[in-house]
Image (cartoon, rainbow, N blue to C red; front, side, top):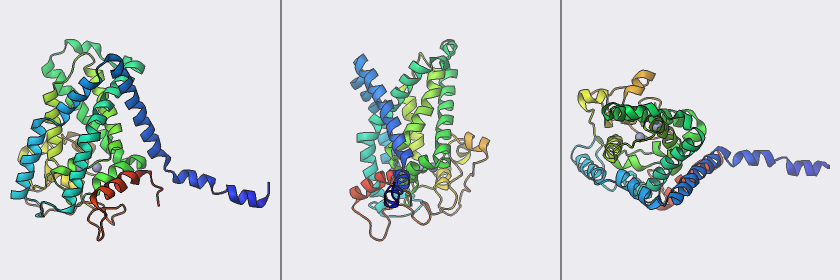
Length: 318
Ligand SMILES: [Zn+2]
Ligand SMILES: [Zn+2]
């Protein structure tokens, strides 16, 4: 082999690394789970029914009402006063549309796909004896375990670089509002939904959680991004409040307050920082803006920026 041939082939390995393979691997795993879900549901003739049920849980009138009422409260008692059409709000509204069109069916199918794969490859994890347990014990226990699984997924999002690349999109927001709850890369949900499916399969293999409870859980998780100073008083020691979650979005320390609905996991792990009642409202976002944000001096049009932000985890790292 001549020296010139070696020179031509030498860049091949760095180029491969530059493809950001972990992001493509996560996309492939997600596609596999979705395929398992769709194949199973088509075989049972239940695809449409399950997707409709997912919509009923994740876009319930209760959740829509919560978003509207919280939006009104943000206008009356804002933590940070800003125009209703602030760039951050407009960008988050684009993510809300993406959530409604793409993410809700994706979340529904991820749950079904996760349960299908566990059911066919790891049925031994199902606790059949819980069929005799009272619902008053079993349902709260399962929701508690689901919340713990969501905490673990969030912890992994911050600890593992490939997952952080997807989660960073959520943390770029410099103008938090209730709509920021929907600002997430669709592929960010894969680990969370698979992990949260495990306690349901283990504890309730033959029963289902009432949809209204799932909707209530999602509502509490949505309220945490509100542009409000609310700490929830003594309840805020247990339930994640907007002031508590704002500390997780602070520019200087995002390693605290990882809780999704309950604070107990942060308390147990030593990551809880409870907000003082009249503490000043801190800045949010990522210091130095390592990735494109709508608050930049010359922002792109909202939809173009959204496409740019969604593609970002697949780009070569600098
Ligand atoms: Zn986070
Ligand atoms: Zn958040």
